[in-house]
Image (cartoon, rainbow, N blue to C red; front, side, top):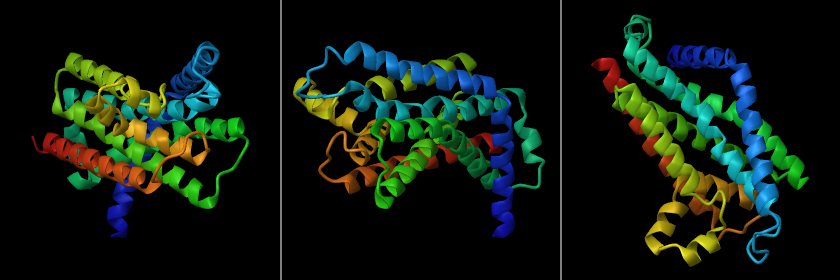
Length: 257
């Protein structure tokens, strides 16, 4: 068991080492996301209905924290796609590692990238709200971030291994980003979505994994109350398992092809 875990760790650390090679890209991405946060807050803070949102900066910050994991966690999918097209997977198969070790390692490597990228945004939340959550809430926040990054990493690997065409992969990544970003509660409160959107669309938006994570973050920092945080955590667990299974399946299928 220890040697099996060691093999997974090697794959994870390999992907993490490659991640640090893009440190300037990473710094630019963080700057871009932080700029988005403050620009949106500056533009909309003076025009939003105070009955729904008192401070738009404090409202949108948890949402940007959730969506920020997308780009960094999805970077693993782009690398996997390149490896598939160049036949690099043949080299990976020659290593003294099982296919399952490679699959789990790649997913966890992408998730770790997302977690590292999210650290500045979580630190910003602590500064903006000027409060430290209780141990219970902080544990839920960490668990939510882990499940969200695993979900995004698995989803990116699913897209990159299910489709061989580079152009189609790029299109699907952009479409996925559009759906997760704009069909979520990152910009709008749940009460407003429920009031003005069709019921079926509200159900889809509220069960979006990004929406679920955003709602949990907002509950943790007291921005928006939720009826039952446990239900949100269970939904997040379900999404994490579904995407993890899909990512593992398609990556293994690619290795066996």
